[in-house]
Amino acid sequence: MRKLIIAMAMLTAAGSHLSAQTAKETPPFGDRWQSVPVKPSAAAAEKPPVSVEQAFYLIRSSILTLNDANRSGNYSVLRDLAAPDFQTRNSAADLADSFADLRRRKFDLFAAALIAPQLAAAPTLDAKGMLRLTGHFPTRPQQIDFDLLFRNVDGQWRLFGLAVATPPAANVQAQPVAPAKMPAPAR
Image (tube, rainbow, N blue to C red):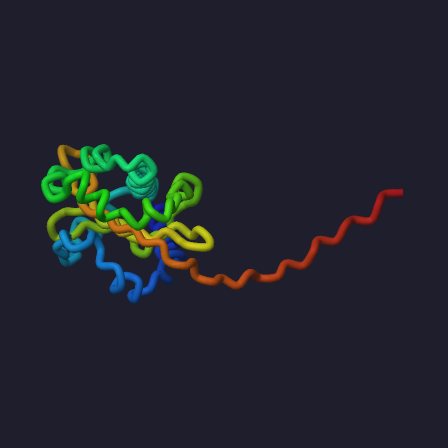
């Protein structure tokens, strides 16, 4: 348990530089989304709703399913794997419209399979029991920001809301590394 808390704290600290400005510029989940205030329950404060590994799986699988939909132009699988409420609110055509910019730019989200996501906050449950995962993949020259919401349906976390943005990556100054000295040859 202690290792999990430390890992989550490290992930939270690593992803904490996401700006509030980015969140304000791109409202999560588009026009069809109704904001739900995030107030973790007392039980949620004691124990994370999912492990870090489960969170990474949910993030990666959602982003990679979106990537497949963008590449194929077929959003029906993304829609069909989501929660029933999501399916009711969004047709495959609605999803195609929502992600037309990514598709038009042929922005490849495949890096989600290779790079660990950096969470902006620990996985939390809101007052309605929905799981929120927010953060980014530190890709270059543009990073992949995500804001995902999941509903538990019959014991399985299913996508309820999805927002993806690709702002320019933050400039990180690399620390110069002194070259290693070669050992003297043995005589």
